[in-house]
Image 1 (cartoon, helix red, strand yellow):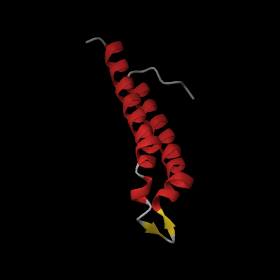
Image 2 (tube, rainbow, N blue to C red):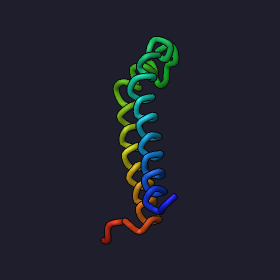
Image 3 (cartoon, one colour):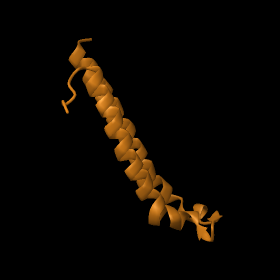
Image 4 (cartoon, rainbow, N blue to C red):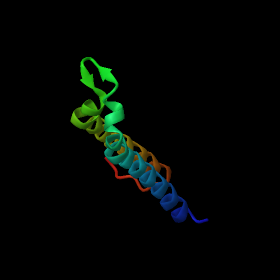
Length: 83
């Protein structure tokens, strides 16, 4: 496997991982909202919390994690942008 193929394989694996996490936070969590609403945290049902704030927090953390991991992959293969 060439260096370019290794780079794209790592990038593709990272992208698929992020898409799976995004899909879980977007669709799967909200599909089980009735069950999650049985759990109450600080007076709020968990399903309501995930719709109002939880998913957004997960998305923001996911963006920063993706950028960090992609930068590490770019540096590993010598294609990172110079500062």
